[in-house]
Length: 526
Ligand SMILES: NC(=O)C1=CN([C@@H]2O[C@H](COP(=O)(O)OP(=O)(O)OC[C@H]3O[C@@H](n4cnc5c(N)ncnc54)[C@H](OP(=O)(O)O)[C@@H]3O)[C@@H](O)[C@H]2O)C=CC1
Ligand SMILES: O=C(O)CCC(=O)C(=O)O
Image 1 (cartoon, protein in one colour):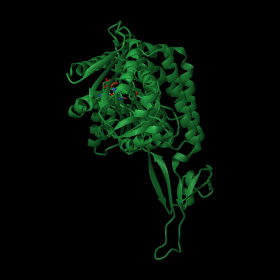
Image 2 (tube, rainbow, N blue to C red; image 1 turned 45 degrees about the vertical axis):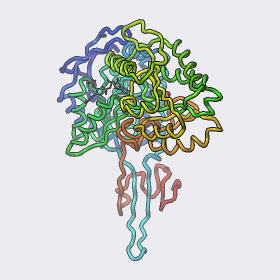
Image 3 (cartoon, rainbow, N blue to C red; image 1 turned 60 degrees about the vertical axis):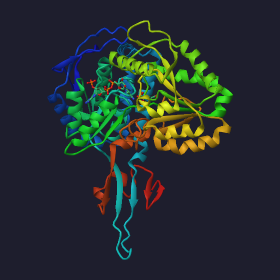
Image 4 (cartoon, rainbow, N blue to C red; image 1 turned 90 degrees about the vertical axis):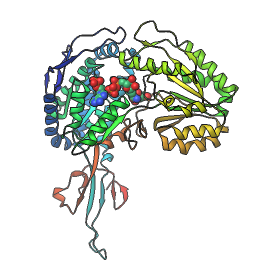
């Protein structure tokens, strides 16, 4: 079906009447067809009203029906075929292989959550049977299950037009939890968004679900984004983007008569700690691997390794020489949007213009005005501690190496870092004592600690944490990737002395869902 430029509100497709948006072809900077009419306050109101109307029915769908719906969403995305990949390539500038992988991740995520819904352990069912004979007071019968929060507003991310966008992790986990979703499409990839949005809209219809389970609006952050977060029928927010955007949404959500949680993934510089024995045995290999991670996707990953901490000495020089050589072979890459390219160039020129920072190496020169060149800088630990601006995210393939005089300084720097999504330790057996000192500091600072890997490329699984303390996210108690992401959109309800006839299936005595439940504290399938 040709891309029409229409928003999807419940079962309908309609053209927004606010200022239109056009995708910009990332490689050429030229506007693309068609125009996408922006949503108005009335469109926000209609989408939220349908979502609210759908909530009570959708949240009570049987696990099998909800799981099958998520799987149907995945299949419908695959059924779009190559049109989805070519449109996403044009709008984002990301290469085919990356986008095909991202589509696999998107579909895998929906299927993973289908499994989670069937499994049912996310309901966290608990039963404390009544103790009528307990003295001095009897205990009532207490039963707990998790219920969904309500409609969720999801902001598509610019840098993952599939896996963190219309049907990305936030949408998949919210739908799995039983929450209708209203998406604010990212203005950088409206065509990709419409294609995916229509696939989800079709799956809602085919499953016979209420139309308000899914809507998708185009338009500005100010009108559509703020309007959604302020709407009383929206009960939670999922966001990936800039710190300024995320914190603006946190403020709006907190200022509502009924404040709501905002799960915003924002900025992270993902420190990499190069420990001495690892450097002594493989500094050159680490340099090469690091550059691979730094330049992946033009550096436009929130997990990009933007900070390296290492001890002064010849091994660090070997690392830098190897990274310099690898960067010399790294072509300049098309960046997602003119705004992101310009923010990247400003960040790089601030580093280059800082007289206490030295440029160590560059990637290949840009051959088009839409490309960003990779860059590696270095400074001393003393300068880094003096200048908080050096710890700010430069979103793109730029990184800063900190020369540390000793291990204590490295630990002090770690202690001073803001909250991060990840921290990486390159180590060998002889580094264990030092790693033991680093670990408690990193646990307090980050959501995922990796050893001898590189932070880009988050695995989809049950134990994954893609989150971290502020400002890497707005709420470090959760993750946006992996099955634990579903917990962001749930809350517990306790049923006290509720007659069996009124209890939800998850808590009935005969356990009709076959759930693993905690009965009087003990986990079992009873
Ligand atoms: N760490 C990370 O994961 C990422 C960080 N970034 C950072 O963000 C910068 C810009 O990238 P971009 O993707 O455009 O991120 P933005 O945060 O600017 O935008 C993300 C989404 O939020 C909306 N939005 C932004 N500000 C507000 C606001 N005040 N109120 C309501 N909605 C708002 C935007 O709407 P609209 O633009 O349509 O008005 C867009 O839909 C990058 O240069 C980079 O620094 C980007 C992506 C990922
Ligand atoms: O590294 C990844 O796979 C995920 C990165 C991410 O979440 C992001 O860039 O927004």
